[in-house]
Length: 183
Picture 1 (spheres, rainbow, N blue to C red):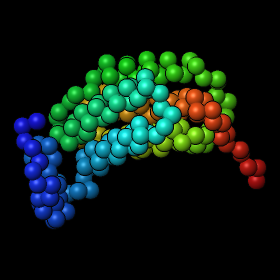
Picture 2: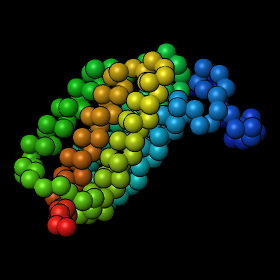
Picture 3: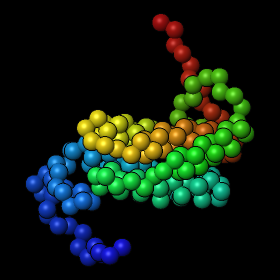
Picture 4: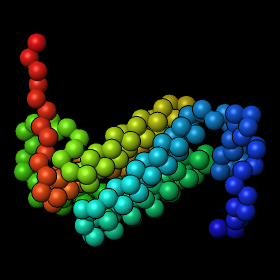
């Protein structure tokens, strides 16, 4: 990294604008800022998950790799025309998804978030991932977006769902099944 942040506050955003990675200034509520901001929030929820007891080392390594990719993806959303996420990154998630899902019993009911602390943290990350994907799609309606990045977020949310189920089983927790209420 060529530039180091020696001063965290700049006061340049006090007018409601922020700088993109390209140097362009846009309103803080711009679709591009919403997209990379939500990816940052997703990355933070993964940090919470990684700090939660019960996440096995192999899963920690993979989630750490995902965090690095999300930082790249945030860069994509921050810099118009810049791409880093490729089809191989999506394929990697699909391979992990298949691996973890193969160990789980078939799903017959909807699952409520919970079951164990780690599983609940993973469900939170999944929900934020879905929002990040929606923000990416919103951005794509007005500006070009790398389609692999949107696929990556879609697969990641699926993976996080399967990891939440896996973590619940590893922690000895019980998946909380949704009970439909009849009217």
